[in-house]
Image (cartoon, rainbow, N blue to C red; front, side, top):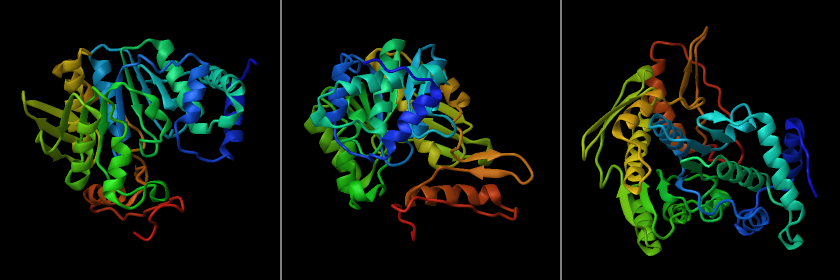
Length: 349
């Protein structure tokens, strides 16, 4: 049965699904994609998991790829202002009617799914819509951010060739637990046979991810900061710089905060991995893309009276990193902090 929606209708349909909550697992997304001829098969790019930094790595890598002349599709979450931000074509959110058409196509497919699977969740519907957009766009590179965890996240139907796992910390403890090793194992489950793997993890998390990559039959494995050292400088509101070796590469980015240095190093090395795989992003494009990246809502300074510093940090590690970066930015200013978080976070910490 065909479904026709405008943008407001698409948002209303997603709102209606929200009441059904979050259900982890790949059974429904597999069944949903099967109805629309499995558009995820054959897509190539990068799947990015991790506790913090996923979106920044995606934004940096997408900017680098576009600077190299590649046509890109980027799937991220959550959005700041519009659901269309979750599906970006060549660096721009898709048009509202395009988004609505994709949601309508997915909901029509959901109507003919076997009833045993139940209704797909909001996240599964939007993930399927993004995958359809990627197939239709026939771009050079798909960059997809994982949602919660990895093993049971609906994006894990994707085998894009390159798997990135940023740092590991405690978040979504109700679903992933409080143990770093267990969290790392859940996120490392995005690694498939033949993947090239890049991670920023260290300590026990790195050990878990490295072992998971070996079991999966990964083609290569690089721990950025361990196997591949880097040096970086925090420049306050002027952003950051990073130097990585082999061959030497000096990068500057407007992203604010010392924590972004590691994300930049990961994105730059991932670009080189993609080049080795045949998706060419020359170092000149890596430099240009790092300088051109824009990622609103992440340590973003907004001039005004008073100026605003806004960030989306939502777990203990991220808040700690944000505060460390904010203190020098706010030095000499009488500062008021406004903070909000959902009840499932480690609020006392």
